Image (cartoon, rainbow over all chains, first blue to last red; front, side, top):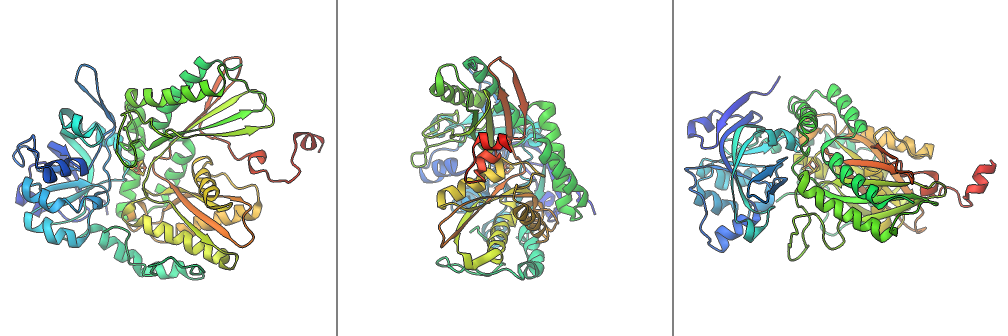
Length: 222
Length: 318
Ligand code: SF4
């Protein structure tokens, strides 16, 4: 069965989000901004004023540093765009989502269902994962325009807040829904059922690592 | 004498080719994987990746927004001479890395580990790494750039002779499953395994096995080659595919490199060269000729030092 394909606004309504199912493929239209640890620390810890109207202008937070440069004339050259792993931002996300009204957190690898239930669901937000995750050239094609780069001087190109106008940017994949279900955990559970068979005939290491477990449903994130 | 200008120009071209053009051997491997994949989501991901490589080439843009950490391997024939010497060569490689960061563009990934200082050009303390190898004959120099991505997928463990092949398999599976979940390693990957040496050389062997050998290459020791086949098969029978979705393809190929180690130990490292398996190679001759390719052809008999009395003369006499 081929996954469904859906076009979504970066300022989606609750109804738009309610129709999404885990594993749906999404293409985005509208403004999206990048924000990762640099932006979170500056906005939340240093209490700097966020240089955008959120969520009116955009409810889509991309965990990304683009492969891009600022030309001497001040214009932008954005080549490829790829997300970075989101679980590292769990420390700041609850406050960020509450403060900015973000409805779409877009990144790599998703969060845990615990994260989704604790602060995505109460804020009506969902998680979209990039595909692959190396589809940077395809995503780059979806960048209609780079509207602004905020905090470049303070944070550097990789951590700055890039504001991107997306035109059918994608593909992304729906990795959490409004109930807080997690696509990756669903897939992990299916794989774990059969994993014992692959391990048959292997041998646990003679020298253990302190704190090591043999629980194969474990994950390395969170 | 190889002109320094040729080195500068070629290095810049290599940086661009590595970032944009997926090597044919990996592409063929991924196409073959896509044909066998029957997981709905995994299949979709593989098809998107194949489209992505096309888009990158068509638009001349980097295939992945994370353009990895560019580094260099330099291989020289024993008779090669560089205009300006090795210091000029290193300056040229650093310069090309910085220039390409602006011109491709690449992501300025390299920062200071503590102060997070970013020069916005992928150059800094110890960056890009430049490593060397030599061959007994030839007046050429091979420039190889590798843009390896991925904070995940690499691990090291001290095993012991008593762990045996079963222990090797266990650690291999542990690494694949741990970093395969949610696709953190951006699989299907070229898995490189280092066995033996000491901790640092074991890591180097495994890294080079993943980034300096091609899909379909086999170790010159037939028993190691058989183990490569076996581990590839094992990785693909986990039931996990791209992005950690249910699927059949984790490993596009498995390459193993070994080095003699302490009699009591059996060091092992695992490395994953991701969906953006970026490498690009050129051979430069003193007459100005430049030949581009994607196979680093690093692991020659001389690099493996696979016989104790190895010498060019004895080989020639055989
Ligand atoms: S691991 Fe490779 S494919 Fe994945 S984001 Fe990094 S460079 Fe891109």
